[in-house]
Image (tube, rainbow, N blue to C red; front, side, top):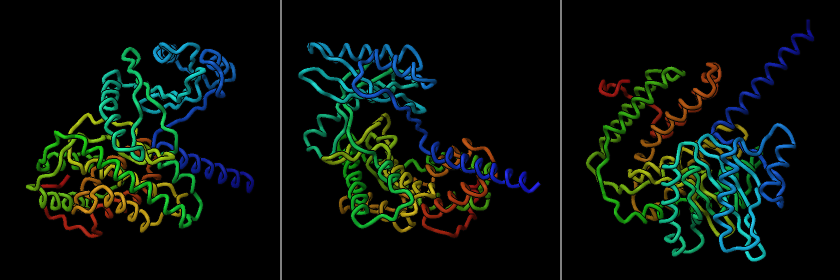
Length: 398
C-alpha cells in the first residue's frame, strides 16, 4: 500500500510538472521542429527528414511547392544557385522555413513565411516591409527590419532576408535559474532601450499620422467584455469592478487630450525584437490599423510583465521588471513627458485578454485558482498603480 501511495504521489507530481511546462510553452504559442542538416539540397533535405522518422519536414505538398517556386524566383539570372532548408518553425498563425540560398557568387539567409490565414495578411506584411526597409536603411544599421525578397500570393507566403541574432525573449530565457550579473543586466537594459528607439522610429515614419482624442468608450467596451469573461475563471466580481472603475476614471482624465495615432505595429513584444551584432531589428510587422501609440507601448510592457509568469526567471524581481519597462518608455519618449498611468490603462485590457487565453488553454480550475488568477491579479494591480479599489460607479459594472 505504501508503494502504491508513493507511486500515486509521484505520478501526480509528474502530471503537474507537465502541465506547467505546457502552460509556459503555450504562453508564447510556438512549436519549433528542427529540420535536416545544413548543406543538403532542397529535394534531398526533404527526403532525408521524412525518412528519419515521424517528424515529417513538410506537412503537405503546398509547402514543398512554395519552396520550389521561391528557389525559381531567387535563382533568376544566377546560374547554379540552389536553396537549402535549415529548419522549420510551426506557429499558430504561420509556418516559417529558414533556408540558405547560395551559388558560387551569392550566399544569403532567407526566411519563407507561410500564413495560415490567407494571402491578405501576407500581402499586408510584404507591402509594409517594402515601404519600411529603405526608410530604416537610410537611418543606419543599428535599427533595422528584414529586407523583403518575394511575395507568393498563391501560397499566402512572403520571403525575406533572415535577421541573424536572438530575440529578446530567448535572451531572457537563457538566464533561467541564474543570478544575472551587472554586465548581463546592462546588456538587457541596452536592448530594451533600443527597442524603445526602434518603435519610436517606426511610428515617426508614418507622416500621415494625426493627433486624435482617445476613443474611451471603445476602450472601456473592450475592457468590460474581457472582464465579464474573466469572472468564469476565478477573478472575483469585486476586484474586476474595482479595476474597471479605476480604468474608467483614469481614461476620463485624458478623454479630451489628443495623442498621435499612427499605424501601429500590432504585435509588439519581446519575441518580435531581434538583437543583432550591429543593433536591433523588428519583425512580424503588421501595421494594418491606425491607433494610439499607447497600444504598442502597453503591448511591450505586458510582454516584459509576463516574464514573471515563468517561475524559473528568478533574476527578475518586481523592481527589475519595473526598471525594464521604465527604460523602454524613456527611450521611446526621449525626454518628452508621458503618462505612465495611461500606459497602465491600456495594459489592463491586454492583461485580461492574456489571462482569458491561458485559462482557455488550460481548463483545469485548480491551475486557475492556485497560479494564474493570483499572478494576473498582481499584474492588474501593478498596471493601474493602486492596490485598493473604490467601485461605486455603477456604469462600469460588468
